[in-house]
Structures are given as structure tokens and as C-alpha cells.
Image (cartoon, rainbow, N blue to C red; front, side, top):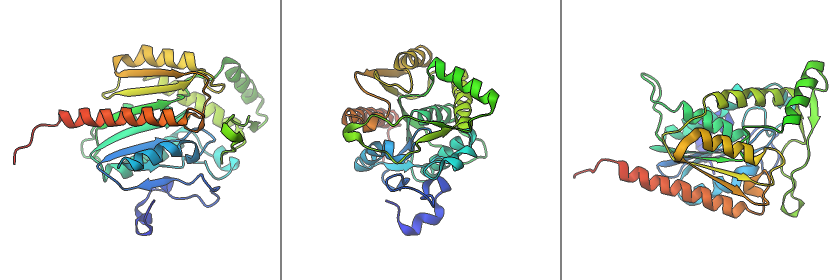
Length: 285
């Protein structure tokens, strides 16, 4: 959904990588004055959150769905990146939206939700810097704020050993045995980078100046639902609506509950847009 004449103005994160598998392409769509940044998870690709991006497009939003650094290419490419690189990719896509929108909605899945929280935390006007549009809402899906305890212990032990460099990864349980265009392995350094990112996000966790929706599958085997929603609820205050979806796994937009997830996110964003419009000063002709 990007016109060829617009390619030169796109940041790298919104351009199709050279080795990108079919279905994992980024999306840059110029629509209305409301912008939506949609972020995928670690070892994933835009495919896993594409239903959300498409819904935003259908409802008239400008949309940026980037490929985060090291993704949608090869596991070796991911080995050379860390959380600051992933954040830089997301921030570059957000800056692209800032040039064409007057308000921004953030939506992230798993590690992408952590990046959304960091971006939201630092969403403040910069004196002498580029214009930053106000946040209208944040949607956090399966927020990777915690890993199961055994995983952190195992990752720490393997890191001390320095071997292996790459770990195997279970295939997600999706309807119709769908095989997403994502990596079937994860570099060990990416796990430690994710843990560092979790620590950074957790230290700054607190209320945001906009409505926040947190959705999590109760059957999520990757990120523990109860612990994550409890910490988000305890830290983010009454501006957060937290919902546990029964019998739902990790890749929320691609599970059997995908249509409900999309509906809830869109209702959240549209309600926030209405509240934003009501907050504007009356204009007289």
C-alpha cells in the first residue's frame, strides 16, 4: 500500500528487506490524520499483526507496520541486533507517521508491546527537535513483560557457557496448522537482549497520558498471562483496561479469537479518537 514514488521517503524499517519471505512485508499507508504504529514480536514478522494493521487501514488511519531490525531476513541477521536496534526501527516508523498525522495510536504484540511502552513513555515534545504528535491510545497484546522462570534460568546458564548460539523454538499453535513467516529459532543473544529490554520497561512502568488496553491469552505458553496483567494493572493505574481471553494463545491476532482481538483494539482506538476530538478547543469561523 505504498506508492512507488513514496519509497525514497520511507525509513529502512518500512521498506521490504531483500530476503523477506512472502507475507512478512512491512506496510506504510497514508490515510487520515490519525496514525497507527503496529509492532510485531521477537523472531516474528509483520504477518503476525497484519490483521490489526489492515483494520486500521480500513477505518481510515495512516498506518506504519515496520519490519524490526534483524527480522524477516535470517536468524543470522537477528544475531547482530539488540533491543536498541529494534526500538530504533519502531521509532523511525513512528517519525514517518509524525509527518502526516495529528495524533498517534500505538499497538504492539509481545516484544512489540514492550517497545510501544518505551515509545509512549518518551512521547514528550522536544525543544528544537522534530514534532511529536500526541498519543491517542496504546494497545498492548501479550506483553512480554515476563518469561517463565525456568527460561530465564536456562538462558543465564547457556549465556555463561557461551553455547549454543542459537536455540530451537516451538511452532505456534494456530488455526488450520498455519505456518507463519517467522524464524524457527532464536539467537541466545536475542533472549538476553529481550531480558534487558524487560528490565528497562519494568523500571519505568507507570500511568500513561492516554487510554491503555492490555489483552492477553489465558492459554499463552510463551508469556505468563496472570503475572503480566497483574503487574500492568498494579503499575499503570485506572487508565488501563486489562482483559484475559480464555483458551487463547500468544499470537493473538492470528488465533481463533483474532476477530475479537481486532474488534477490541479498534473500539479502543475509535473511542480514544472521540475523546481526543472532544478535548480540542472549540473553533469559531
